[in-house]
Image (cartoon, rainbow, N blue to C red; front, side, top):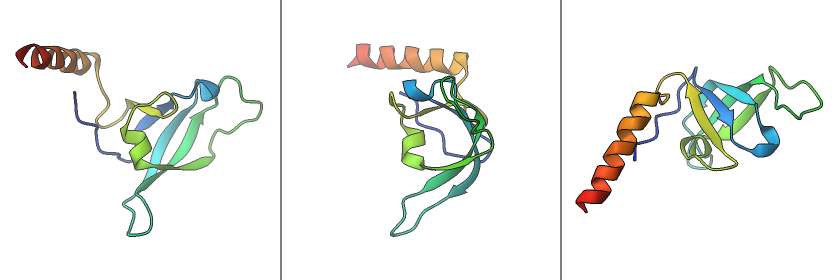
Length: 104
């Protein structure tokens, strides 16, 4: 499996949550965290969810970096920007994963 890319300013993430389908967010700031605060990213809403009643475009959200780095059904997936997956990279990762399982 490919390693998760580092969270960077300019990356665009799509919301995987079915309640927020269609919503995309752009990373505007990255905070490394501290002893008491987990690393997080400040993100700006680029597109509204399809089923939302009010306009959220331009609003900011704080999201833990750990949530951005792991793909879950209610998390986020990287769609563009530095480190974004391309169809070729995903194909190669899939082939390497299959070959690794066959060698074991």
